[in-house]
Length: 303
Length: 281
Image (cartoon, rainbow over all chains, first blue to last red; front, top):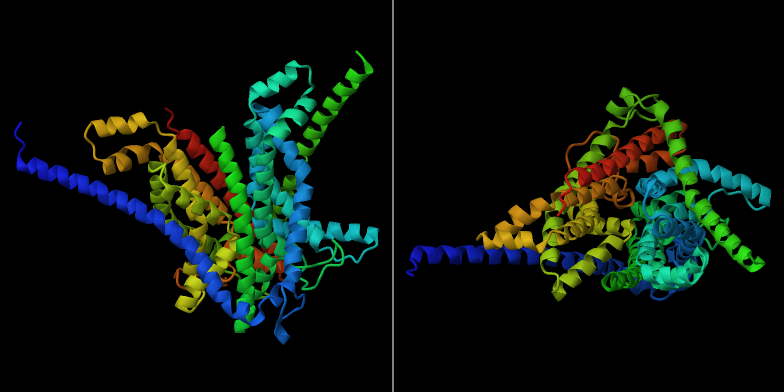
């Protein structure tokens, strides 16, 4: 067959247009890497004055007094650590119950759809609204409980923040846990049941051990979320820059100190110190999320 | 039945009971949050509240129209950045499933999604506010766009992955070029899934406060210039609720009700679109 030159030219042209399209796609995707690298680099550069001036004392000193130029951030690390783990601890039974309900007992049907929409609604309420509600509803309740317990009735504080945080992370961790529990192969479960195990024994001996790494990943991912959560915590934690005496006392977290003080920070070292807290916050959540994602992704590949 | 069996059955029932109780206890916080927002917010809302600017401290009345407009503006601007980038990146990820670069990009998107919102705020401050010399709605949009990007990428990729290979092959076999196959065949089939993802992203973004604290910053004036500071609903709720003035706190309840209603309607809309235009194969 005789190929006319025009035809050849045309096919070459469409071919190269496709090539350009592929390159554009690749280029845009590469921007994602650039964004992430840019974020880490920007924070590091902006935190450099603090890293240089304060060095290691930044992470082990407990005095945070911008007026006298003292920047020790240990209080905020502790605040973040305690609130997140306490929130995780509070949310654990609820998360497991919802996950078992949706992933094992009622996979379909009205009840499951109902609980699912409740959880989705809970997840949809913005953080600032939780904080606002916490401040005006939960704080007075906590205050009266604290009066009964005979501790200083601040109302705001670590425990209040943890309760609000727990409410906020339940939908997230429960959704992951339900998915993981659904992945447990049904032949294993049927084998256990056919051997005479009750459903509880089957869950305890088959479902949980089989899903344990996924559940762990879900908990890790919600921990990452709890650590980074800002507004609700900022509004109910009380903003006190000192080491906590008990879980009732006001404190500050890494995220809440930035939210509270960054807009009014003028001194270079002050700004750099806050940015260094941001950098550390980023690194901690990065590691936690990377490990959690790695486990979850590996599970999905296997199933 | 032996005692032992009875005990085992009892334990089974007890466990089921506990699962019921703890699972449905989550209704309690939801109920209390919605109850207080509606109880305190509903009396505040009227046309004046929705359509006028805030009055100076001390004057009764006034509204939050600046924050409503600001929220819409900041979300729309963020979407203009995030949607094209996100959809293109999503297409790339769905198209090159086995490449190492795609794995890396996917990991980056996941990491970006996990970055705390306050850190995103710091970044937008450093990138835009410092460069341009002032707080602006634009810098807030950049922050929100960074948060929306991974959501759009993920929903695009997940949707496009589900589209069967045969459709693409049919298109290519008819002599349609690769570019046209993607843009005119694959992408339209995935439109419902992608728009669901985008709407969910928008719903989440419109409630974000932390990234706007030192970018959009807040302002009591109506502002349509995106290079000036502007108020948004979440910012207004935060500023008013932490203020010592009861008038402002009452207005914050009204603003909360509007914000929550908006977010829930967006969520519902996303679900409806997903259902109505769902393309099944």
